[in-house]
Structure formats: structure tokens, C-alpha cells
Image (cartoon, rainbow, N blue to C red; front, side, top):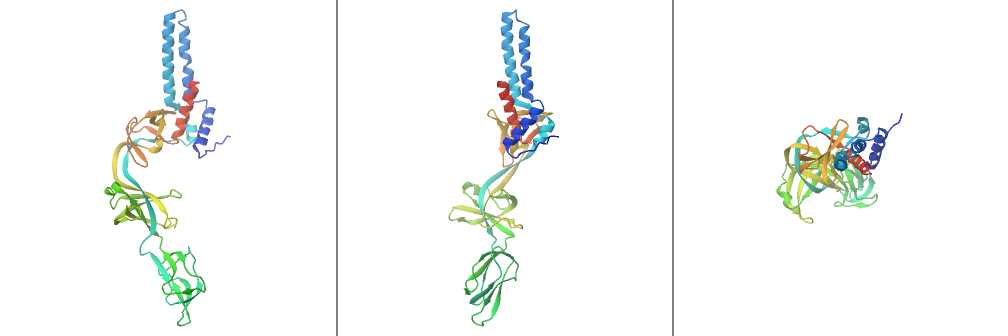
Length: 343
């Protein structure tokens, strides 16, 4: 029993597909090559007729060119090979195209959920009981300070629940009433301040859906635009649009840059396909349609698009089974068949 393992890179997957197809005896390109013998056989039947033979040979070249065109537009992949290669299809149909604006932003703590903890009476710090990054609850003892007036120790406690962002004291240091010993923030929710420039501001209003994406790992979360701040950010000369995100796992970190898509409108489209279905073949944008075990390239006329899908104006019919995953494998196999035919 032979076990095939799929590799994540396009090159490795394409190589696997080639091996699988070789084991199955080829593809539509080999069929086209077999048909090349038909014109030659016909030519022998007219050996004695000079004019007819010349005419027939010319016609044979035309048929050969047509066969090449057909081979260049399609390939055959057995169902089990397609399944093992991760090729997936979905029916083309109606959808919605979003009018989206891509912007950059910054995560910040929510106002009112940030606390600076100071000593009530000046005196030396005798004990520190919390470190940066520690989660704390409201009322939890963070430090003990000896009062210069009473010479007794008193507890410094957390006014809110949250995470310790900063600790500005060391044991034995003198704490003054104005010096914050700790900075605590409730990070269970964060503000996303999005910077909007120029004419984009004319289209963005509170209530618009927003998708926020972390730059580090690409994780996204959905939220809603809450307000557009009245002022202008001095450094960037941008208008700030603000949304709030949940942060129960603590992986969204204040101060981090993010990117976001603000959806200002959605319009229905009679026929759409995912962007992953598109490939370029001989300078044309195409999608590959599965017909049995054949995959046929359909040149497309495209309309509006968003970050996920594109409107199809012509080239497909509703219900066509379009390759939506690993479409580059189909393109690679068609290219291989075309190259083999030329040789």
C-alpha cells in the first residue's frame, strides 16, 4: 500500500499531482497527442493525387492546431487523484460584494479601565507582591509601605481587576504620595483606533462592520465601528474612527498595530466566485470548471470584487462546479500538457 502525503507548498503539491497523474496514465494532453495520427493516415489514401494531397495536409495541420487549442484549455484528473491533491470545487452562484476600506490602527486600553496605584502616605516600601504581567483582582494587596508618620505598615491594594502593566518601585525605596507604584489595566476589552485619511472619511459612519486583523499571526475578529472622533490626529493628520474588541484570551496587546477592513456598503451580485478560483492563463483571467473528470478553463469577464470574492459578468453559468482550492494545480497541469504537445 502506497501512502501519499500532501505538502503545504504549491511546488510540492504540484509535483505530487504530476506523480499521481503519471501513475494514472496521463491526462487530456496525451489524448490530444494520440489524435495527431489521424491526419497522417488520411494522407496516405491520396498518395497518387498531388493537388488533393497538398490540400489534405494543410487541413490536417489546421485540425492539429485545433486539437492543441483544446488540450491547452483542459486537462483530465481522476477523481481519487483530485481528492488526494486537495482540489475542491463549489457551485458558482449569487453573492454579495462588499465596498470595503482598508485602514491601519492601534490597540489602546479603554479609558476608565486604566489605574495608577500610589502610596497613601509617604514612606519606605517594605514589600512588593505583584510583578509586571500578573493578573490581579480588585482589593488584592500589591505592596506594603511603612508610613513615615505612624511608623506602621499599611497595604497598597489594586483599585480594579486587570493586569499589571508597570511597576515603578523597589523594596526599600521611598514612596511618595504622588509617585505611582503600579499601573493596572483591565484588558478584557480594548479600543481599536483606526486612522482614516482624505476622501475615505466621507463614506465611513458609526455602525459600519469592521474586521480587525493582527499583523503578527493574521488572526481576525469582527466588531462594529462605534464613533468617529471629532478631532484630527496631529502627527498623521488623519481622522480617528474607534471600535471595541473583546480580548478574553489576552492575545490582543495594547500598543500593537493592526489592520482593518471597514465595510461601508454591500451590493448583491447575480454570480460570484472566490478570489482563490481565479488564475491567469495565456494573459486571460480564467476559472476551471469540473466536468466529470475533466477540468476546463473558462475565460471570464469580471466586475466588482472585495477581499473574498469577485463578480462574474460572463464566462460561467450558475451551478458550474468551479475549482476553489488548489486551482493553481489545474493551471500547472494544463501548462505541462501544452508543453508536451509542442515537443
